[in-house]
Amino acid sequence: MSQISQEDFRKAVQTNFTVELNDQHFNLQLIECSDHTSKDVPDFERFSLLFESSDPLLLQSTYSLHHADLGVNDLFLVPVHGDDEVVQYEAVINRQK
Image (cartoon, rainbow, N blue to C red):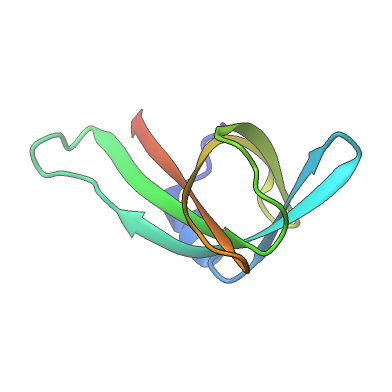
């Protein structure tokens, strides 16, 4: 993943990202960006991203997410909640500043 900041993702909340996989397009909306940075480890940036989609389930894996303003970012997505209508995916970022 490029060095897109937590603030960049925070500004992208409520916007759409696209995953292209096997000639299919999956649309995900970023619904939350949560800060998990700790005062005990100040030289690491930690945050999580929560996406939501009504498209078919994506398995836990690394995907290239395309965004109009943020470009392409490879993120490891994990399905964390779902029902017949919507699936939520989480990406956790923990990196040295």
